[in-house]
Length: 420
Length: 103
Image (cartoon, rainbow over all chains, first blue to last red; front, side, top):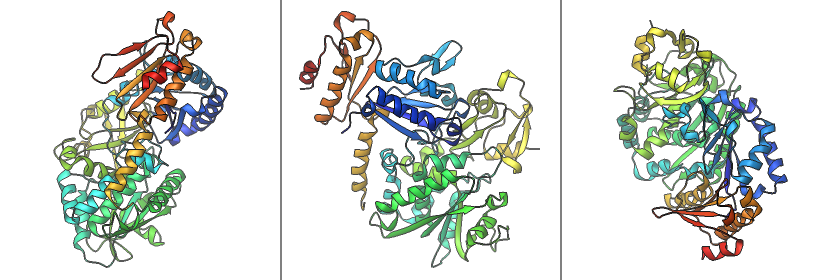
């Protein structure tokens, strides 16, 4: 039992780290010691909180107060005013015209967002297995392994309407079913973390901010299709993501959440990280598989249009964000998931907002909200209230949309049809 | 860890450690920490609350603080907010009274 009365969550996503959040953390340790209240405050490094433009950002509980653009020099004031005297520092809060917005939940940036894959990102310590478990982590895996047959798992994903978040939007359950139906002595699952589109950092943030979620999702998928080995293919430019996933694998193995006979179900699973050298083409399934096999990352034709094979064995390649949705779908149900989004695009989508926009950062919104809402409500509109000209959507294989397309919904069908 | 029950045990302990971030809170104790409150010993009062809560293993009680409460002649002032009940304000608090109020 601790005497802690404050949880100080410091965003240590890559954006905030480059803006100096680690130095701020060190300063907090010093100042708390000066005030002799080290024992009363938990300092927690979290993954990306989202509003990168305001970095370094932090949230202070129990009040849930949100501070932006904090500098090392602000730390003394936060400690003496907020922590010691209970007077939150209004000048570090976001302001709506003249009024300070104290609580994180009231910040306009978050208002239209719905967090599923990013549920814990920026809220828990990604290096703590216990914190992931506290949010309900590994409960879905336990239930799946002890109460469901592999086919039930695939059927539930079918019912949820989950489609690949890497961009193609292929129904996830069809991929799983193909590998499930293919008899083989070994099968593999690969988590595609080869995110290479300029300005994109959705997958990196997820791997860095909530690694156990990706591990849990991968194991549920593996059980459904009968895979016993998994690979995380993560590019070398993402050292923190690689470190966090490796750490999560070690932690899970230590307590028996990965390895042999998980939850006493007889299901065995092992996973490892393979580092990509950063070739854009290796995000393509077959090129990625060849790279993992130790060969040159060349895309090659598949024998069957849907079925991938690595080392000749049936293999599923799922994107990080796709896998990140899976634990929550099993915890909250297929119906809950499919209640969000459009008729054909269910759930939410994570976006990285970059460019001449006020609130650059990491966001998650229901499928089908319009580009206008995404850019102006969540993103806060153009810097300096300049006129909006165009938005580039979906990386090099996507397209540019102009002001005429602002009412296009962000979902697979609408965005595909909008690109000329 | 071999069963869902094992997982649940770990979860309950872990949630307890994360209760400041919005767990299952039954009682919230708000200590007035304005200048007059601090001058009259509000910090000692708050520390005693934290210690007593820990000693009694009260997992659903949260201690937080606020600024000047305005009732300077009654400092330290403490609000006790229990779900579904009217707020109770205690004045002239000291560590001894904290220990009693917990009983």
